[in-house]
Amino acid sequence: MDHALSPLDGRYASSVDSLRPYFSEEALMHARVEVEIEYFIALSELPDVRELRLNAAQKKALRAILDRFSDRDIAEIRGTM
Image (cartoon, rainbow, N blue to C red; front, side):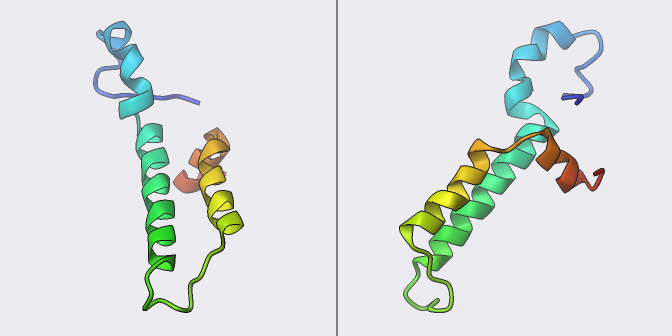
C-alpha cells in the first residue's frame, strides 16, 4: 500500500521518509481511531451515561484494535475494499 506524504513524495522523498509513520494519511487514520476508542471508553465511565458500561475486558478489547490496525483497516475506512 502506498504511504504517500504528498507533495513531498517526489524530489524530497528520501529526506522525509522517516516522517511517513507520523504524517501520512494512514497515520492520521490510526490516530483518529485511537481518539474515537478512548472517547468511547471515557463516555462509558461517565456516571450519567448508564446505558454504556464497559468492563475491563471490553476496554482492553477495544484498545487491542489499535494493536491489530492494518492496511486492511485503512482500505476499509477508505471504502476501497
